[in-house]
Every structure is written in structure tokens, then in C-alpha cells.
Image (cartoon, rainbow, N blue to C red; front, side):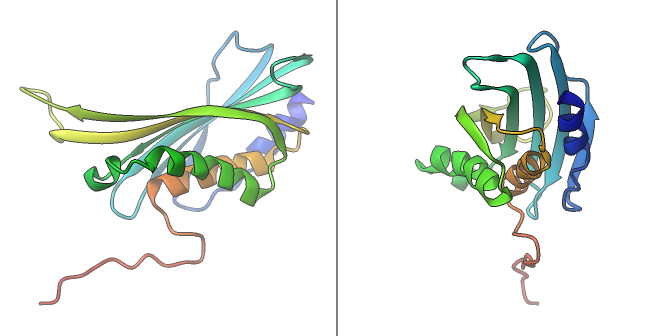
Length: 178
């Protein structure tokens, strides 16, 4: 079952803007683990990064409600204007729930958190003086080992977090006349 699940995740073909790679999975979370990492740059330069970890316990886990658990971590840079929106946590969570639904990723026991951070830099630390980020941590139990749709949902989550338009829709930027 684990090999079938890994093969399904390896079969994911994300849209061109999404860089998807296998990475070393965390150890000791489950008897069997596998992980993917992704990075997406949005049309305005915002960066979204993430990791999708597959956990497999052949004996099952009561809290999971199954034998295959997927764990996602995603981080997205935010514009300062967006960072103060009181609905932002709900919007961030909807990126995950809508991606799972749109991709047809059958699951149970979905849960997670959204964390918003603002940072200010001082002194000799290089980089922008102020940054704002959204972090999403979530997990769910897959209902079968055909995880391609779950991997596609992970890529869709990151595309949404980076501000990419839907596939087939062109992004129009504002240009100054002159």
C-alpha cells in the first residue's frame, strides 16, 4: 500500500510555475514516510513554499481514522495590505479545503492551523525592513492509496497562496502609460 501511495505522489505533474521535488521525510512520525517540497513564485513576486509528508502506519492509528495520513506545511509571503485583513485566516484555510475538493481528494479527519506573522528587521540584517507571512499547517487521512489527487491539491494550495490565477486564465498586470 505504501509503495502504491508513493508512486501516486511521484506521478503528480504540477503546472509549470510549481517546482516540485522529493525531499528527505521526517523520521519517527510513522513506520513509513515520504515527502515532497514545492516552491511557487506568484505574479507579483510573492513566494509560496511548502512540504507534503505522507505517513503510513500499516496497523492504523485511531486518531487518523486510517493508515495513510498526509501532513502539509505551507508558507506564503503577503502584501502588507493583505496581511491585516481579519478574514485572512479563513481565506488561507479555504486554499486547502477548496484545493482538496476541486481535485477530488477523498479524505477524513481534516484539521490544522493558520498562523500570521509580521517581522521587522533592524541593524545589519539584510532584507526587506518588514515582512508578513501566512503559515498553514494541516493534516488529513486519505481514504485510499491513490494519492495523485492529494498531491495535485497540494500544488493547487501553493499556487493559490502565491496568487497565481487558475490554469488557463491570463494574469494581466497594470502598466503605466507613457
